[in-house]
Image (cartoon, rainbow, N blue to C red; front, side, top):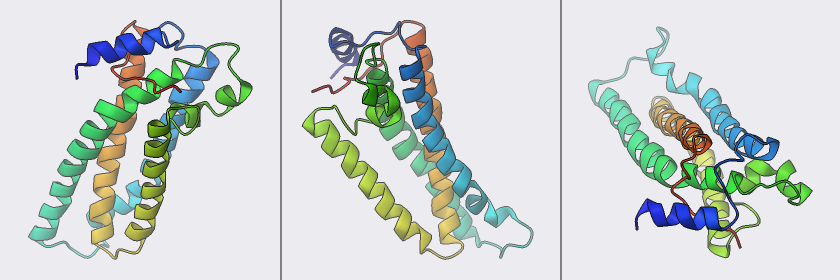
Length: 187
């Protein structure tokens, strides 16, 4: 599928690129970005633990795993999942928050923008499944011991940082008149 028809579909379903600075779209985009950056802030110290002088030294193979995890998560999570799919969808949905929309959509704009409600069945199932899956993975990763938790958290920092930047990138393009290459998945 090409990106152009999706952008045309998005604009024809009520979204536009000219409303991105109204309060609800701003809240939607910046709220989702803030959630991602908050997660980065929480795991950043753990990811940097191997660099502390007081930390147990890592073996060359563990350093290799650290670097490989960062690269893999940057590509798979950051680029493939966030930049190509999630970030454009967040921006596309935020841009559909028109004046006069139900108050809940504006008040919960980050959750709306993530596709957690007022979305197609498929989008809601995907968004809720992803959210529940992430919470499950967080629980599992917390059980990892040093250095493996640091290795995984370093990859998470890489992926979420690219994801946050991708949302802002697609929003910036939308503010310049370029529709996000994603369907807003409205019901």
